[in-house]
Image (cartoon, rainbow, N blue to C red; front, side):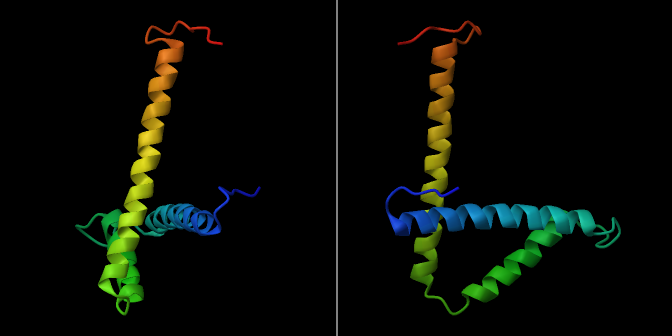
Length: 108
């Protein structure tokens, strides 16, 4: 299935963010599940895995201009904020259409 908004740069950015987010979530889950309970005594396994991934990401960005990194972070936050905004709007619309009392309203 192909997704497109008609702007190749936007399409690429959105798909990279989605693919990367999905991959990192799966990776964290798999690594945490694979660790023995006593692998890091006194530490949260999830926190240890996040710290490892953070370190790997940091090495990839060491040579990148800090303004580029800041701009990339801003763009990711912007897209995340918009997704949350649209989810809230969809939820509000659903509540208005279906009623807070669970009674469906007929429209159009």
